[in-house]
Image (cartoon, rainbow, N blue to C red; front, side):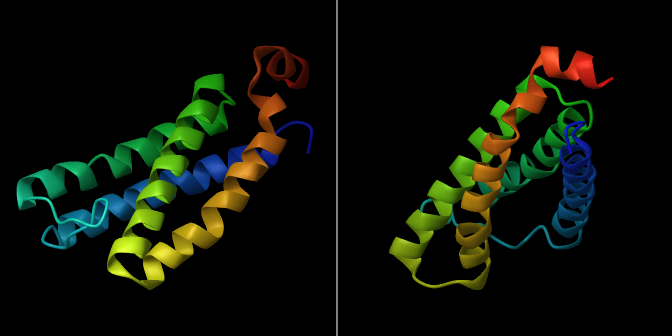
Length: 128
């Protein structure tokens, strides 16, 4: 596991999830994502939804190549999604999707911190 195959596999999964997310948005542009317990106007909600696929793909690309910036982007993005999920839980109540985010993002963030050393240039040059 020292060579980062696990992170690279997560990167591939992030790219796949970004493409699936884009497909869902294209097929159902009318669905709303609550942002901190509110439903923004449709055009703003669509713009916010359209940020997700490129972020997933960018993080995935960075993970495949173990780029240090991808660690920071992934942790920041995960933290923002987690904050939004907790706010929506508090304001809107229980929801299956938000509970999935609340259940899986903290272990994912911890795992990334555990593997953080892979995202440095020195480790990358030693493992290639």
